[in-house]
Length: 269
Image (tube, rainbow, N blue to C red; front, side, top):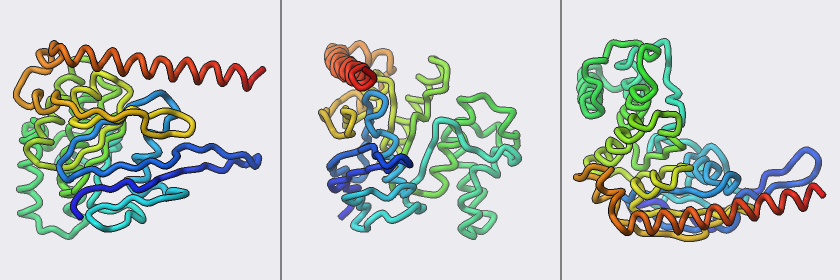
């Protein structure tokens, strides 16, 4: 089966004092190849835990993650990760960073150079190939991280708050780039974000998760990612449905946060 299947995933973290935290409980979802999923929810709802299970960094307590018919049992090249900070090799040039994966696979120099040059042109960094990473702005470093991920030709791209540290203008430009890469590459993308607007813009499908234990509260299927491929994102935000769904989700998350605060106050009394 082509795509990613999240099959009744639960995750419990045992604490040194003998207690435990139930981070996820019975989460199930089928994601077709080429779909773009955004995930948001209040702090502590298990968003990053779910992403780390998909990456193979964590093994779930119960359930399983299945990609293209194979159970995920650890990290693998078919899944690429883009972190909030680029996690780049600062002692390498931009070109060397992007070419690291193909080099580790033993790819010959000429095809590796062609792939690297192509991807750097795609993300708008063709003129910065020989620059050191530390010479680049935060937005440019995230472009390098995207290109490095794509160089490994993963089936699924996992993004953990990849634009959270950027200024507003750079963030908007990067949102447009993510949509462009999604449409041009046909990759499956799962993006974690705390921004409701970003989740709406970059989520062909959008999950709102509820906390403690983390579970799917509501799912939306939205037109805004497809619209944003060809339209200015500021124009997309003016769509009447965009504002309606944004306010609905903000209300959900606000209620969850209030519940969490009340619960914590009760526990502390």
